[in-house]
Each structure stands twice: as structure tokens, then as C-alpha cells.
Image (cartoon, rainbow over the protein chains, first blue to last red):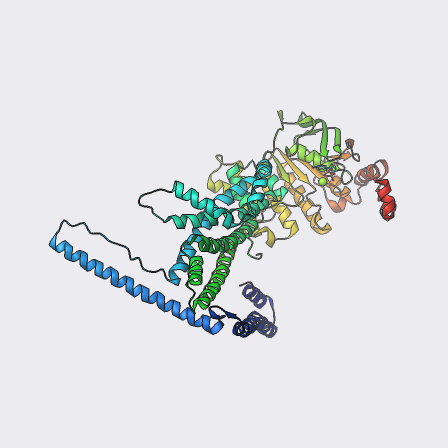
Length: 330
Length: 280
Ligand SMILES: Nc1ncnc2c1ncn2[C@@H]1O[C@H](COP(=O)(O)OP(=O)(O)O)[C@@H](O)[C@H]1O
Ligand SMILES: [Mg+2]
């Protein structure tokens, strides 16, 4: 993305069309060719290495085996969809029939409880990570702003932040699980307990980078700008809105990118450990399954996890571009 | 004429790790309404500290400032500041920067249309109406300083405080800015305190030049009245006897009476390490 903007910058700046064309080709080959070469070399090394690793579940999967499993996983998903539709169709028919016989019959709709497919798990993980991350942002950014504005509060909270920041999600998980089971008691829960567990674990781990970076950004605003605000006697709210937020946007977003990266890693681990639905559970299930395709399926999950992590980061970056007043930076 | 701004008996101690540092001692200054006063002195003597105390950004350790019979306790738009580094909000255009100030000061006093006219009037005053909707990053240093002045003027301050407003500009731009400022001053007749380290600028613009002694414990050394007739012409003044006499007075103060001895201890830094260890 940066290379593309750099490219267009180049195109606009260069006076001569010829030099711009030449430089564009040079840039394009750098932007496209080199990554393609890199990936190709990686795939070759991977297949050679995979061929020579023997595990109890057979040979380590190479790129071809993984690609096959992608296809298989997608087909399984489609098959499951067909089954679900058939189930609902049957249920509708049955209910209609009963209604005909007895008009006072209260229709019961049961949800289809088939196996969650790979695609379902991806979706679950994405929803969980975004919910946990948004909750963390909603807490961390206002707190960070407050800490940045008040050296007193910052001094008071800094030790707590520093101690909780390096805590692994694996340590939080049992605590979160116990607290959620104790407090989240409802006969007809809107969302499942496991979802809440994963979400809160993600939140607890992704709070800190956002909080630290936001407070850092706010505390380091140019003192001249703060003086302008004081001379104008801006109200605290206007001060935050007109000066603090625009000035600290770059660091707030740095914190958000760090946090989202942490959130995604934490979620996969939490899902594995707690058997909560999601990509982590998929990996664990396949591991327990131990079929000849398991390793290839896990490898497919690894690729998807990496890809999603990358796309999440790019998403925040795009959001930053959209929000930032200084389009030339970032 | 009665005193409009009274700076009386100000001491300023800054807390430092090595104990309090006395920057100012018994600073006294009386300024009349509509007077243009320059503060001149060697760098580091305490000019900005005086200005910041008048602005309310610093609290004096002793003494106080009375403006128009009210004691200064905190910063406020009636004491508008033009900072050396323009300090425009980089995410707002020239217009929006002035607008922020105008909205704040004339919240319930001007209608939307009146505010718009007032913002445009002030930008026109500093000759910035052509670049109203540009961001600070898109205009030159001199232009930014003009917008900073427009923002301060738009607050209709009782005193305009300027901390080396043209210090970061090249000589030609600076001359332009000085002419603009004189033109504005002819029209508005503001009360102004301006810090400068430029002797010509001080004589050209001021009614009064306040010369400060070197710190620590800096104070007002001499006050020079500048009674040159207005409007002043920089070229005509270059040959003027009175002008050159005043200029010489300031120079004498700065380079004879308050000669700054720069003690750069070259010997200190060239002492070998084990020797300094003994000293420390
Ligand atoms: N916030 C501060 N803390 C400690 N010392 C300061 C502070 N501000 C200024 N000083 C000291 O006070 C003296 C006067 O500073 P200043 O008013 O900025 O000088 P000037 O504007 O004349 O160059 C200097 O020696 C400076 O180091
Ligand atoms: Mg200064």
C-alpha cells in the first residue's frame, strides 16, 4: 500500500514522462517482482523441507497438500450448508403439518447443530477478536487520554499498567472463565459463555498497548499548542476535541495496531486452551483428530491466521489514513 | 495618563534539581494604554519569563501583574499571545485557526455571519486573505506568523503579547512583517509588549524600549523613550540623527553595560577523564 502511494507520488512529481515511466517500471518491478520471487523461493524450500520431515502422522505437508486441503475444507463447508438447509426445510414442513392438525400448536424452531466448519470458525474468531478489541479500545483510549492529561493519575496507574502488560493470556484465562461462570448466569443467554470468555481474555491483553501509547501521545503534545488552548480558555471537552485528539492520533493508532496484533494472537491461544469455538479450536481439534490430513489442515489454518492478522493490521492502517489530518505522513 | 498594565515587584524562582533558580528579581514596569513596548536583552536573561507571567502562563513567585485594575491570575484571551513558533494548530486551516479563537471569545456576542466577517477582516489585515483555506504546512514561515498575529488580533485583546514574533524569519520577510505591524498598529492602536533581540526592530516599532540586565536575578536595567514621530519610514530613519542616537543607546546598554561574557569552558571539556573524576 505504501509502495503504491509512493508510486503515485513519483508519478505526479516527475516532470518528464519518460523518466517517470522508467522509474515506474523500476518501482513496479520492486513492488511486485521481489515479493513474488520471495514467495516462490519460500514455497520451494518449504516443499523440499516438508518432504524430508516424517512425523507419526505421515510426511509434513508441503504446499500442494495444503492447497488440496483448502479445497477440501471449502467443500465440507458447502456440504454442511446443504445439510443445514435440508434440516430447516424438514422442520418447516413438520411444523406446518402439525399446525394444520392443531391450530393452537406453538411452533418450536430448533437451530441446526451440525459440526462447525472451517469457514464458520474463521467467522467466529473474527467476530470475537473485533468485539474484544472494540471493548478494549472503548476503555483504553479514554483512560489513556485521561492519564496523558493528568500526570498524577499517570503516576498512580503506571505501575499497574506495567505489571499487567506482560501477562500472558494463558494466565488470565482460568480466572476469566471462573468469574464469567460465577457472574454470567442467565437461563437464556444471548451469547455463549465461551464467547464471553474469549472476548474478555482478548480485552484484558489488548488494553495495555493502546492505553500506554495514547497516554504517551497526549502527554507529549507540543506545549505551545497547550498554551494556545490555555490562553483561549478552551473548556476541557473542546481542548480534547480540538487539540488533544488530533495531536495524538498517530500514537493512538500505533497503539491500536499493536493491540489488534496482540488481540489476534491471544485469541487463537485462548481458543485452543479453552476449547472455545474459533480457529484455535479448529487447530486443536485437528491435532486431536490425528488423521493423515490433519497436519495439512492445521497448516492451512496457520496460513489463514497469518493472512487475517495481516489484513487486520492493514485495516487499522487504512482507518488511520482516513482519520489523520496529515495525509503525507503514516 | 494612568497606568494600564502594572508589573510590580516580580520575582521568579524556577525549581531545579539543584534548588530554586532565581530568574527574575524585582521587575517593575508600568505601561500605558496604547503603548508599544519592546523588551530587549541578551538571550536567557528572562524576557520570555516576564511575558509568560503577564500572560498568566507562569505564576510569579513574588509580586504581581495588574491589568486594567484586575489582578492577573490565569491565562485569558484579553492577553493574547503571539508565540515565536507561530503555534498554529497544524490540522486547521488559517481560517479555522482564527475561527477557533473567535468562536471562543465572541461565543454569545456575534452572530455566525458577523464572526465570518470578523475572521476575514483580521486575515485581510495581515494580508493573508488569499490563503485563508490553506493548512499551515502549505504556507511559508512568514505567512504562518501573520496568521498567528491575526488570531491574536481577532481576540480583541487588551494587551497583545509577542515573544520574538519575527525571530525565526529571514531579514527581508522580517522587514515586511514590521511594516505590516506598524500599519496595523496605526489603525488599532493596541497596547503591545514585544520581545525582540533586534535593535533596529525595537527602535522602529516602539514607544518605549525596556532593556533587561543579564540573569540570573535579571531585572529592568534602563527604559528608553522613543519619541520619533509616526508614521515611521524605515528608509528615511536610516539617516535620521535621533534614530541613530537611540539605536546607539540600546547598543551601548547591550554591549558595554551588560556585556554578555560567554564562558565556554573549552579547558573543562578537554581535561582527561581521570582528572574530571577527581574534580567530581
Ligand atoms: N520552566 C523553567 N524551568 C527552569 N528554568 C527556566 C524555565 N524557564 C526559563 N528558565 C530559565 O530562566 C532564564 C530565563 O529564561 P527566558 O525567560 O526563557 O529567557 P529569554 O526569553 O530572555 O531568552 C533562563 O536561564 C532559563 O534557563
Ligand atoms: Mg525567550
